[in-house]
Each structure stands twice: as C-alpha cells, then as structure tokens.
Length: 380
Image (cartoon, rainbow, N blue to C red):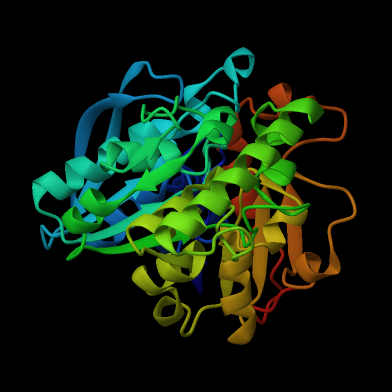
C-alpha cells in the first residue's frame, strides 16, 4: 500500500513537517508495511521556506529585521541549492505570529521587515525570488516593503509618509525608479493564498482587516487610505491595483510588488505542488492524507489541502483530510473532494484544550485513516 502524506502546518501548533511525521507514525502503526511518502505542503504562508528547502535542498539564513511594530527580531529566509533562488515568507518578519492578541494594530503595522528580507536576498546575489505572503499582520498595501526596497513614498511636504496602512491617506507621490533599477534583472514570483482584490467588499481591509484586529471604524479608515494609495500608484507607476485579483493578498503586499518591481502574482499552492512534484508521487497511490489547522470556507480560495485534494481527485486517488477544527456546514465544493474529514477537536473542547497533545491525536488519526480503507484499498 502506498500512502502520500501531504499536510499544511497547524498554525500556532505544529509545522507541516511535524504534522506529516505524526500522521506517518499512525499510518505505520496500522500498516507497518506501507510505503509512506511525506510531502509537507504550504500555500505561500507560514512554513513555505521549510517546505521548499525540504523539497529542493538549500540552506536557511537568519536576518535581523523589524517586526510589524518596528521592533528588532530574527527572521529566516532560504536560498536553494542553486545559490541564486531565494525563498522568503512574509510571515517570518511581518506575520501575525509575531504579535500577541493585544498587540494587533492594522492601522500602524508595517511590512518593512519583509522588505528587509527581500533586500538581504538581493545583496546575497539571488536573481530569482519566490515570496510567500500569507499570514501577515499588516494592511499597509505593502508600503513598508516598498520603503525597504528603496521606493520613496512622499507626503505633499516631500517627507516620507509614516509607516502603516492608516498613514497612506497622506501619500502625495511615489518614486519607484531606484527600486526598479535594482530589481530590473531579478525574477520575482509572489505566492498568494487568496484571490481577493485590494479594494471593495472582498478587499484587503474588509475581509482581512478584522482578522488582524481592525474594528469596523478601522476597516473604513483603511479602505479610504488604500483607495487613495491605489489612485497614486496608478497615476505615478501606471499600474492598476485596485481591483486586480490577488492584489489584496497580505493586506496589499501583492499589489506593492506587482506595481513597483513587476512581480508575478501566482496561486501559491499550485507553484508549491509543482515544486514538490506531487503529481508524480500520486502515481500508484492508494490514499492521500492532507490537512490543516482549521478548515473553513477560506479553504476554497487556494488553501493547501484543497490543492492537494483537487490533484488527487483528478487522478482518482481517495483523500482523507485531518484537521484541527472545521467550520460547521462546510461548502459542498470542499466536502466533495474528501472521502472523509477527520476533526481532532471534540465538540465539548475549547480551542486551547484541542491543541493539547496534538501529535498524539495526529498519530491516532493517521491510524484511523488507514482503517477507513476496505480490503481492496478503496475508501469506504
């Protein structure tokens, strides 16, 4: 029996590699002779560097940069074995995981630290960059990234605009000529885990602002500021970002890189599944086990387990999802892809309680997934 184990991370609990290890132990417990292929996945958010380095080889490099509130922190990026390809994840420097719940401040949080990582990769000599932008704590339109890359964001007095999305209403003009020159021969792919535009009801402020601590008043303020920002970008850089798909990813970080350094905005999970060669590993496979910390309607918008299950379904391979928790009434578009969705959290448990002994729960779920197969190796 051949089993492919391809989970995303359980954010706030375990990285994708440890999730895969625990599931694999459970599978071995149920079927010691099974051929197990571990393929941890990511969709451009937290864990992207780990997954890409595991798949392609290379090394991790630590940098001293700024967190979303401007405090010094250590963040890691990766360079692949070719020595020229950088793997960067926004979550490392500018992620929600950098802040406590009481520190969330989307009006002032900045993506500057992510720009510092990009600059570090450029100075290292990388001429290709793959940047995963999921999991950010910012709604600053990527303006912090641009500042770190040498873009001038100026007020009407000719002074730099303060960092954070709430200050973008003071923006008078943008000069990206220095950054364009620095990055003219660098190929940049931005891995997005959502399709949202920058503005509107499906935009960065309305959809992601509340997740990053924005009140209704702050969401309105951010929408106004981003609307002004988009108009200045279009006038000064000649690029339309307001309603372009994926420009709302990571609070507008996708928009910034798309406009200033001509980055490509790609569906993160597709790029990663191609890199780890999932399709090849699915050949002759009897079962795929995937999963994530929480499965909800957002899973439909390019999240890792959906990408894994979609590819498996196209090849006729049954897929079991093992998730920490799941939204009640999951859309049919999600449920139809899985032979079973196993939820680790019991109905009577709090989220905190459900995160205790996660590895043991995953081992038990891996064992149960094998028992979900009948004697012919087909999902029940």
